Length: 309
Image (cartoon, rainbow, N blue to C red):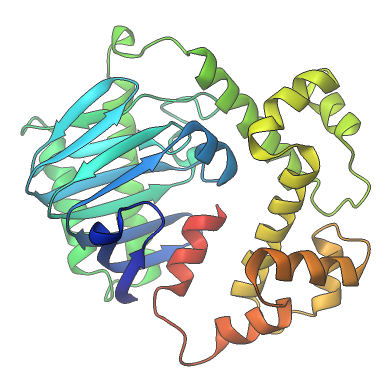
């Protein structure tokens, strides 16, 4: 799918971010071809705690007129041909000039054979022509070129190959290159644990903070401090339930709304409808119709996938 997307939330009025995006989405990976102009984007620690995005990202900069990445490792200047690996649970910001990139998003489990999925990882930039980097560039470029023509099996096979090669490159990095896990990284990892546990128990309408603290093996006060940046236990749990509901609405055109409320842990349909409308400015039934009408934007699925992980 291909289209244009604009986001006015993170940029000054005269420099609103806009980009052209083509995307290919499978259950175990997603690819985006993105080209855009000058803008600044920031993922703060608070935002990483709230947005539920915990994937690994590979970005091949096919062209950049001068972009700069700011993260815990410092300020990194990007060049055309750079392959950037980053952990979406880590805070970062970027100043982008005109650019074109190919972005591959992988679930953490895809690289678990090479790096620990239960800890955060620093940004790494791979450049030059040492093997297997030229092969990875070629494979990612080929995915981009054939984004709408490869069948799912061929697409997945190439993604598997890229994941294997990148995993080997990451595992070959000397241990001294990996900084110790800082206190904020430790907090992020705990929040990943919270997300995993909540995902497993979203359908339980009686899940309490005491039960979650017991499952994590921490005190209630520790859990409270951990979830404070996300608005507390109740708000965060409700947010995750609503995100799950939105995901189901996106992929199931014939879902029964009352049953959906139960699956997402809401005891009362009226409560589900109210909080859903408060969050998304439309009822679940209205969103279902909008998502599956023939005239919907070609980027809707990409946007919903990116914000719902």
